[in-house]
Image (tube, rainbow, N blue to C red):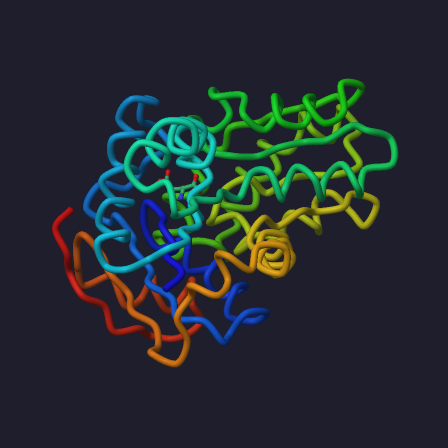
Length: 267
Ligand code: DGL
């Protein structure tokens, strides 16, 4: 199975993109809803929670896991790939959403002025900036943490005028910086894509990591038959969560576009 991990529901947006382009595989989704948000947590804690989730998904038979959570991709992926995997699961793979997103942003930006909106944790890690500059040292990166957006989206307030005002406030500096490309660097933000577009105008290219990661995953599996041939097909999809509250179906529907049956697990 392909495992998809997120701190909560937002990663369902990423899974949805995978299902569009790679519907033939089986997927196991895990949302750590008992411990969301990750965006405000330290690197040490995000790494610990991520490793616990990976242990669980590997124990269920996943061979390839995608960290749909941007905060986990920013703060834990490097250690996972360099220490955890070689040590514990050298045959398996864990990929994140950051690198595909960064590559796409650099391809699209004409003037090399790229904005990033993300959680506080992702911005503080400077991971997007570091990866962008690693690939193109000339690029100028403007980051903006948007801590209010995840709670507003999870409260179902995406149509509220207040959300639009807050979004405008967050985007002010990026407009002033005249970025021509903006990375939506958090699982939840693609829900606000049209609103961001309306504020920034057609001249700014928006990068939704879920869509980009899905396209790059198709290419990755083509280039890695040793992984691709080990992925199961025809069994189906399962949705796991570390907490099941009455809001679960409502939020799952928002992110997945339909209600889902989920199972509660302990990590
Ligand atoms: N999934 C997180 C991310 O993409 C957002 C929610 C959280 O803070 O845990 O960064």
